[in-house]
Length: 142
Image (cartoon, rainbow, N blue to C red; front, side):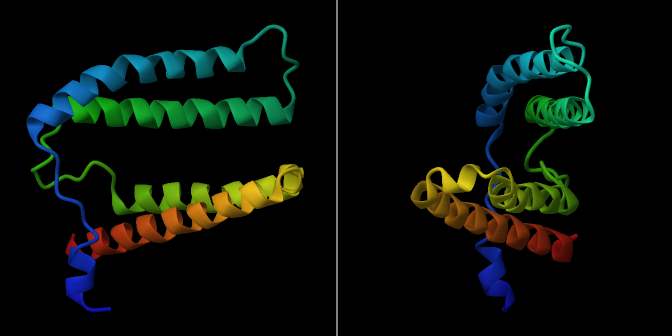
């Protein structure tokens, strides 16, 4: 692919008058998600098994990351050199979206509604390809 095709992948940065209200709306909500995820780790009625601790840790790490991004909406100028999510972060998010259909097959939920899950799998693959393309474009321009 040539550079003209990659140039249309990178979205234009949002203006400041959009990012600040978004940060104001998302920051308290994501803070509640962080608190809820932390409570999941210490819930008294859930037995501490490897699965519950690992899932709780993944939820806590994800909600902390989203809280960090919502704070960046408030404090980082989107027209500056730093992007909201780094190329590595985009690739990690893409891998999470790639893992969702695989996990649904392993857990058996895919076979409960195979048509809906097949459509969702196609959407997840599209999201993975888009995120991976944006990440490659950002790493080439860095």
